[in-house]
Image (cartoon, rainbow, N blue to C red; front, top):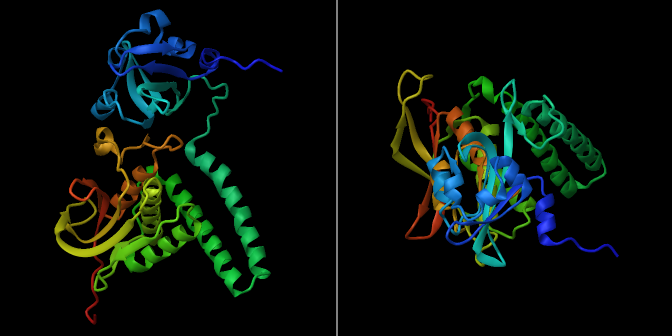
Length: 359
């Protein structure tokens, strides 16, 4: 039987830089990949305070280095490592078996000639942009899923056709979303039109409740008198899907999970945009709130920035896309943690569609 490797052997074999730090932020262990990344020996790194060898352009990320409870993943962030600057992927978190200790993971990135970054440790520096990867790796499987759903629909009863119809509808929506992501850099104007926000919420809620692994009931508190909003339906569906998905993941750790969707009319929101001759009023609010733990204080002001995430498997694009899509329809989005109730709340401020003279 092959002898099981020791922990230090596993650490030494990792391609990513790894540091362990104690409760006083003192570096205790350093693997060879960290020596390469910091361009110095483990001897020169050990017993140093973490912030003396690592800092960020982001004030919030620097604060995270001092937060003993922080569990964070950030992608492609500007960092300073002992005097040399480099974009890196960064993670930090407590050790469950030893909560007074934290582990820091770092992966350096290289600037590509044509823009963007690639992994320092990567052996395949393919010149393929994110839109090309999305088109090839996602849209092709989506076509196969859509075709399979159509075949199942032919052999299904009415109940089955209802579900296959939902699959086809969601596949088509995702395909349109990918096309929109591919054109995000062109700043194309959103194709807005009057839409019933409650029908969109119902559509997303049914989809989420039927597919979610979390047994969560989504409650609503709607103002039925609300007029139509001025939005792009597909963009609005994606915004709501991202917010509800985040809420369901957040409350999965709660004994009594709760998610509320609230719609209401207000008189506060007005913005000026370069595309409109007069200020745009934002009188319609859509609130998605949950009783989950919320985001760490250190990153609450950066949650809409790309590549900021608290999920180890996350890429930090969900809320960045939400903000982009909301901005495209001349809306606004706000995050807040209510201290008195302990609820996490995302509020959408949306423009109202013009009312017809006969209404």
